Image 1 (cartoon, rainbow, N blue to C red):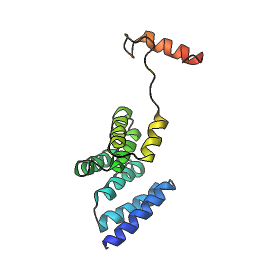
Image 2 (cartoon, rainbow, N blue to C red; image 1 turned 90 degrees about the vertical axis):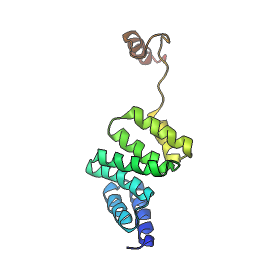
Image 3 (cartoon, one colour; image 1 turned 120 degrees about the horizontal axis):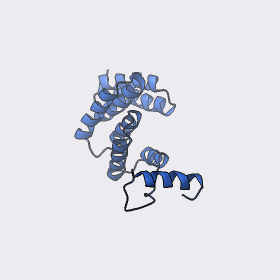
Image 4 (cartoon, rainbow, N blue to C red; image 1 turned 90 degrees about the horizontal axis):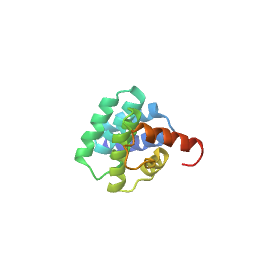
Length: 147
């Protein structure tokens, strides 16, 4: 396969991913990496491997590897953030997504951060967020619509 074939396969993979067809996207990304192992192709391949095959650690490893090579590419941050959210690591995912927005604004990262939302400050500021009093007051005021 040639470099042009890799670019074509990558474009098809991105199109399939936008259509929420991760299995077809995975096939295209694998072909793209075979043709030309660019970091961007590897990043998307890592995301699809984690999403479709459930190989989360392998996907995280691929994304971290390419982020070390190209830390200025926000797509790498997007893909790693998606995988971390799938793995249930919301705190680290938010950190990675915010770094991605700081590197270069990305519309999908913005949508993800907006969907995740931000936490409100604790009711009683001098107490820890995990303090039972803060938890109970937060739930109560939330149900009453006052928070």
